[in-house]
Length: 122
Figure 1 (cartoon, one colour):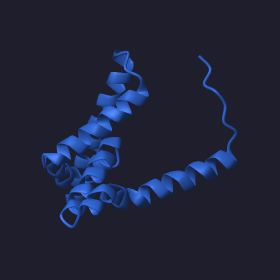
Figure 2 (spheres, helix red, strand yellow):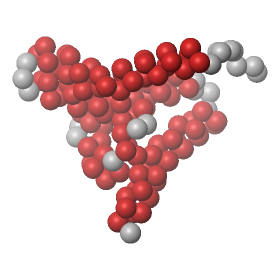
Figure 3 (tube, one colour):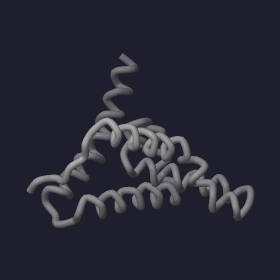
Figure 4 (cartoon, helix red, strand yellow):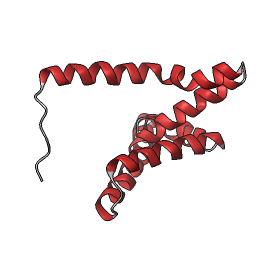
């Protein structure tokens, strides 16, 4: 029963974040790229104030997988690096997110080789 409740929390929080983004896409004139940036900044700003950590502690992957989780990760890495030096504060975010960035580049390249990309038809 405990694992079911964990999955329910992950799905509810991750689903709420994604639903909010989809509502913004459907009912506003904000472009998808701007929404991505806003969510990334929201994750970073909430972590800067120490609030996003509570969401991550509650929902785990439901809070870290969406793009707001990437902003959280960059901000958390920079804050941890700042405890050591100014240079680590600058590079800490990229160091913390390095695995995800590498995976995105490698898998993006592999899928670009496998599939033929084409423009979206309106």
